[in-house]
Image (tube, rainbow, N blue to C red):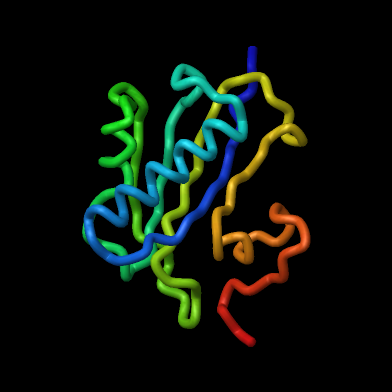
Amino acid sequence: MTPVRGIRGAIRADENNRESVQSATRELVEAMMKANDLKLTDIVSAFFTATPDLNADFPAYATRELGWKHVPMLCAQEINVPGAMTRVIRILFHVNNGSTPEEIKHVYLGDTKTLRPDLAEGEKDDRRNES
């Protein structure tokens, strides 16, 4: 039996509007799929969060438009931590593709690389945007 693995990713939306949320979500989903050589049939489920300042649309909606009709998906609001990076969409894929934990490629695009410096080589920890 193939174990279920988790793949993380994050991206910042340019603005709090439907197009920006959908565009950022599609970009991240496609980057995560490509980086890990995933097929849609590898995806068990997907969990999305958005920072409280992003409420113009559901990230899962943009993913459904990519053909994800039979993948269980859920959206939630990220914890409202004072000083945290704004306009962030995070994704957790649960996958069944035979990859080992060491082979998984977590995808942090743009500014979000600072959210997980342990996964984005050479980046400093800047979760609170402190100087």
